Length: 419
Image 1 (cartoon, rainbow, N blue to C red):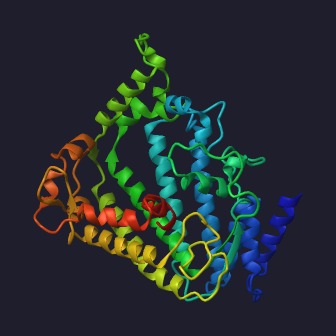
Image 2: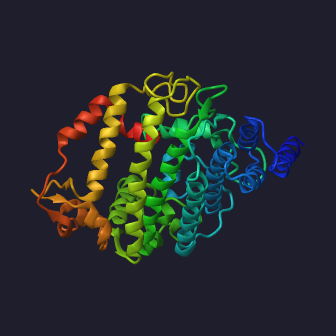
Image 3: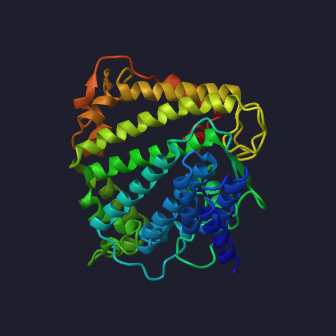
């Protein structure tokens, strides 16, 4: 009943789109849609509003946020459908680690279907960027309780506690990558954060980060890796069943640690991927360049804020309500912005990435512009990087150590948050 009432409210908002909306009306509609899980209804109403009034940045911000939530939910539902997290590796480390619920009847997953899943996510996050890009210098805001945003990965019905945005963030920023997700969202109770124009730029940058990773994955043919080792992760994958004829060994055989070690080595060895769509690598670089440009726009807005309104990405002058364990200081903001400029120099090839084996550095611009086959072992040992080596200034170990010092050894955690 509650969902029907919310849906009626959202649809009504869309029908009244030509009329001037009171400040905050569309922000409330966004909050209702996200916190109720009524993503589809919310998207339709907010899309109608944006279509009728393209300059309504409050509706546009809300629509971008709802579409991003839909992208996450659709991709999660696709991965749940094929049993992600309860393949052989999931059984080893325990299903408490995973964010998705256990699927008791996963469907068979093929290589072609998984590529289609990745392309669908790429299309969805591209729509988020297209939605938010026209926003102007607006004061639009949306406040959300992140512990009430529910993802229905397993389909219609009540959401599992582990399927809330608050719980996902708690795991993503946990000190250890193997720390189990909490049974209840953390922090307990309301977990409110306010999203404004700066956070719209942040969300666009995140869409580009995801797009870059997806373009990289789709640029290569990784069928052999999938066919041999997808069962590590998906119970619905063909390779989920143990090999016939496997026998116990001194440490436990097919169910013991030596099998996992052997298969992990085999998986790394299988990463010899042929580049089949080189244009995707060039697009991946363009997405990373967009992340740099959006960061340059975002931080001046954050630093100029005069309020203290539970901002998702706060400045040093604001209370950190979103991630209280991760303090934002002037030194950290400066170090982050310096790191962004360094990343941009790597993308342009004006700075080179060091390799332990060579005096020369790796030109990442050439790597993206002239992609070849990707062999992980060859890259780690040297031959894979050799075509992209040249003389020039490389980033040094000291620059990485300085970042770790400023961020208290948690630079990668801030990376997840700041993008």
